[in-house]
Length: 145
Image (cartoon, rainbow, N blue to C red):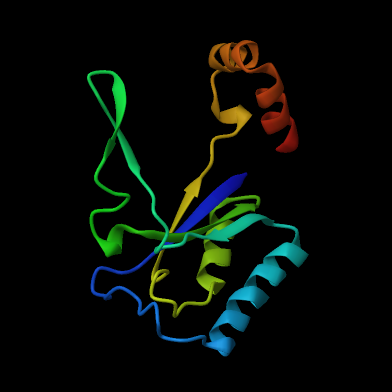
């Protein structure tokens, strides 16, 4: 099973100080955690999201997509980064999340959500997916077996 662990600031936390300087010990703790997950064979991807980079929020209205203000209304809603891990259960995903370091200010709250796998999709829907996107669906579903 694949899970995404997203990170964001807590509601009581102020936005992190962009000019606060490098905390080498903290950065080392994060990188050691990434290395530990990689060495354990559970880390699929891990990225931080640049809060200073421009972005956009796309909404739908009357069946059409359009750009709305954003990407985030408040700094506490900003997703600071994510991990995608492949483990045997939600409990195992939670145990990894509990081991994650903290201290950047953008990762006080971690949310663990299971990603959809082929086994989660009804067979008739999976047939439509395979017909509509044969190469993509083969690459995604086969990679997860």
